[in-house]
Image (cartoon, rainbow, N blue to C red; front, side, top):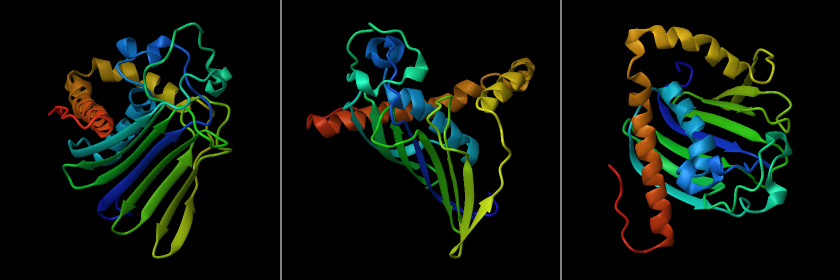
Amino acid sequence: MPDLGDVRHVDLAWVRSRGVPRSGWFTQRDKAGGGVLFDLGWHLLDTLAHLLGPGRFTQVTGATSDDFVNVGAWSAAWRKDSTGAGAADVEDTARGFLVRDDGVSVSLRASWASHEARDVTLIRVEGSAGVAELRCTFGFSPNRQPEPVLTLTSEGTTTPIALPAEPIGTEYRRQLDGLAARLADPGNRGVAVAEARPIVRMIENFYASARSARDPRPVPAYQ
């Protein structure tokens, strides 16, 4: 990111207005392992790794809440989930503060539901020479930002950056189009697993931090 100088901090957020899944695959811990942090949060962390390169998280503080996950009014009709999955026992919102081994701090929020009017994704990168901010909507929700907006701010001046107009879902089709070549390349063997390891460790430590905040008894952290 030459226009930003040395990166110091990144804000990552994917916040739905109403979008709680109604499938046990997402909302029951014995099947999903976790809630919105596993679902939306993982995509945000993948984005971070793509922007800055892979890195370990040396400090992780997290908090979770479940105000909406068992209230039917906060589900999303556009998801077309099946009903009858049973009560949810995972979080619908995760908020955290992380520090990578390269010193970059990260603010993270993932929410299946909120009091916002639209489903919004925010990627904001602060550097020594400027700040880049992308405000858009990941995924297929029709309740989205009218269009993605990318800006660069430096020395008190904010400049909009033009983005190509793309149909919803283009990013997923682009990944599928490149999948066969990536699988056929022997140089890519083991890359996905290596990239996933620090994210898995971070998520485990995030949940450990959230549990310890609610329970004063010691909780062993994963290393």
